[in-house]
Image (cartoon, rainbow over all chains, first blue to last red; front, side, top):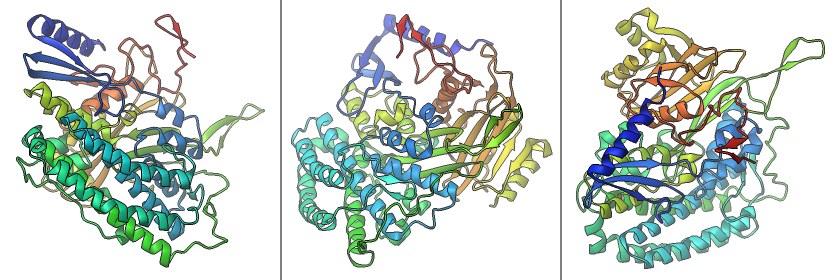
Length: 408
Length: 165
């Protein structure tokens, strides 16, 4: 059988297009793609006839690493997948491993609340980048600076808690690497109070700006059935009007105890599922995450207070050896459904007398990471048929993918 | 619908041979499907008003290792209207020869998201998907040799005459 037919078809298409139309390369570097992405466009004048994404430039073999390292050792590598939301990644990984070990119900509440607090702070930071760089795509520079100024406070808090600014390795199987530093809750509260009016300012400047609306409303309209069929998740599918949030659907961690809404696109400025809707979902989600942060702080300061003998790694087993099984865990990252598929097996080991025996192992047999960005990016060729090149920039920005998790 | 109802639904539609085996007792129950029928089964599960599995969450290609000798594709389906999850698996024995890849039916006509996931399984595990519209490597360069996520893959030393460290 000929396994290279797809490559031949692609080469023929590009060769034919370079005679008839123009082949234009967009990228590899583009401010709205947080990473390296090359878009090959077949254009007719200013109209994009076809868009072929090429990725893999950031591929660092996460799944191969996962087969060589133990569950605990892989946590820093999950941080590097979606480097704008490292906490969410390690939370998903850790939840899956704890479920496979059967210790997910034993984790102390204080630890769960700290995890959710961190994840939501990280979600705000990630959405601030998405919103800020989206402004840059459209040509507004000030919101970018404002967003990065506010994100800096979150980065500072994360650094205080975990010791690093971007890749935290803070959430561990069976607990956390450290407890929260003394005074963290108070500083976090100060941040929330400071940050709320800033969001109002940002909405005045960008969200309700007529130029911004004209550039994004009715652009890149993604119907709901297409979004679902392409496996889109997170703000993309919510922007198309589906109330689908795994924090509510799966109800993992302590999210069932918290009160928050799920913002969905309503087509206020144009058609349902356009770029403005996706942008607005992110802005609204920042407000919802702030609500969650406040509730977590309430609990952490009143019921689940810090005690001197509190050990954040008390529940950590000495050896992390799950039963042989396979398990798919998923959680709601800032960009959508982040899933890990684990297959765990026992290792065969050759004994000295030549017989084989089964050995326990702390290394997964196979790990598949399902990044939300991967599926969100796959809808781009569909969205970009027949749009103007300038609109394509708006569409790419509104999908907000991080190439670290597309390539993994 | 429960897991057994879905199983019964598939048996009623395609006959008893459609389900080769089932894995229950773990955290997530899985159905093993006859490889040739996987595209039809997915189409049925997506379109049947009792199930509406309209969302393919994840598709993973798995190399079960040299001692087992099987190549497997795992589908994680979600029904958004009914909030159900289902795991389907197909597997085939294969002699690990890279000139003759194990081949499965593509489900990319049913779920467009499978398009890229199958390209990734082809790229990294070396599984061929019949009727796939555009089966090219996706993460690695087009002229890369070998399939890195296979258990017997030896790391390449050179790429285009450049030494890889």
